[in-house]
Image 1 (tube, rainbow over the protein chains, first blue to last red):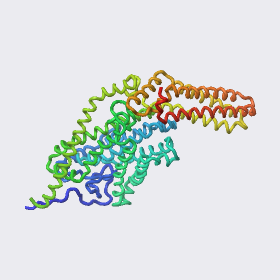
Image 2: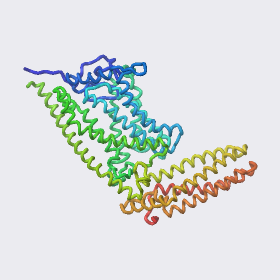
Image 3: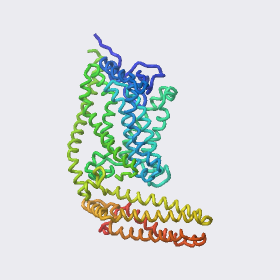
Image 4: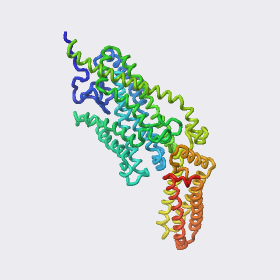
Length: 333
Length: 224
């Protein structure tokens, strides 16, 4: 008997006024193509038709959707979880706040690129992490974080560019400083491309742009790619100048490889990219349909471990440089 | 097996193979990273020893005398002082012809900025620790065959003579500015202008020379 199935990488069309980033909605993304995700779109997990995963998803999502009583008012568990998970996105801006309020030019010139630049990079990675996590867990309650981290990526990137243009020692006026070198030009383009995403990152723009909204949001991938070139041009591949002077600020702690931003980028991006490849998504979906999600986790574990490895050193840098910025004694590394 | 099922099966296999390959690569990289991380402590100690630093002297356990740190320290002193002096000089220029008290206040502020610059620069440049650091930077560069970091010049004997001259001239300028600030009339105040300007130009030239040496590697003949 012939077995026919509906293609599982596509979802049935939903009304064009579907939910995007709304905290209480879990309907499928009307424009999903199964391989691409952006700041706001919500996708079904890869195994959207698998009953067990669906049940698991609904259990966690339903638990998150419930209220609890706090100080006479009722608060959703999900709201608390989202606030807790979203707060770190503000940390880079918090670190730079004292320098901003005291107009400390030395701190801006010395470490704004490390504090806000690294912060923007981390926000971008977390923004890009949401879809793979939906694919793997089948849960959707954390999807609003994608929009939040996307917005904070744009804010940190914009702040970095603004401070660089005003305080850098490079020749030229504002535009000379933000786009006078090729690596800066890459960063400048990233920020410029983030602006339309920031402007259209809302429900109204989504309704107005219709199917073009998603195409526009794919600019996120261009930004992700430009970040690679930005880092390569900024620091090279990490081995040109010998061990210890590898372009990552001479950390001098005997671990230049871990401080190489390009390596951190690569370690994080491998996981984010792999979980977006259509053949891999199809394989995951098939295993989830078979009820063998454990196998997915086993195979994914080393890639996820590498992602965590990269993130740890980026976060370490953010905290170390950020704390120095906060104390207005910018790190010279 | 139907054709449809076979079509589905093949991409799944491709995806599985791809995922396993990436997973193996990631596993190797993670293991390599962990092995490399196991030697962190020893490498850290070596790095500190090479830089003649004690771990307690370095925040977060990092060495205390990288080139960037020296340059940053220098810029951290000179840039804010330059900004303050520029603001004071602008205030003086506005008031020198019509408002004695305001002009004198600007000059007094200028004197304070000049003295602070002298003190900060001297404190950073001539401590025995920083001198030792400079020698280390030069030695490491010599051993590795790399160019000597410009930062070492600030602390080297050659640069010391430039920096000494800069500090001496700046002290003279501060003294002259203080005298100017004690003027009792606008005419007397302006009579100092030409001498102050000449001294300012001399100090600026010396500071520029120091800044220039920081940006460029020195030649072998200049090394101590």
